[in-house]
Figure 1: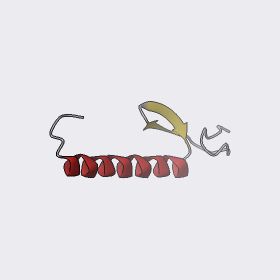
Figure 2: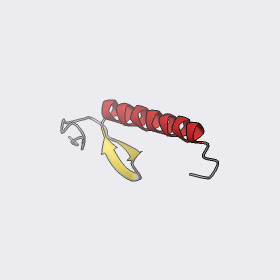
Figure 3: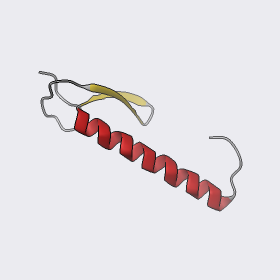
Figure 4: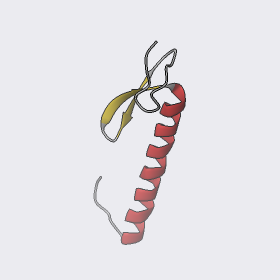
Length: 58
């Protein structure tokens, strides 16, 4: 059985997820948490850039 790189538990299937620019193989639960964390980080960065008046590209 494959082992998740995040929680170190055995999983029936691993999912490839891009986290901080790197592809990691995680179980379904950890993959969902990683996606949610990335979405929250993007949203908070967008809000912060809007507050500071940043008009450039990311």
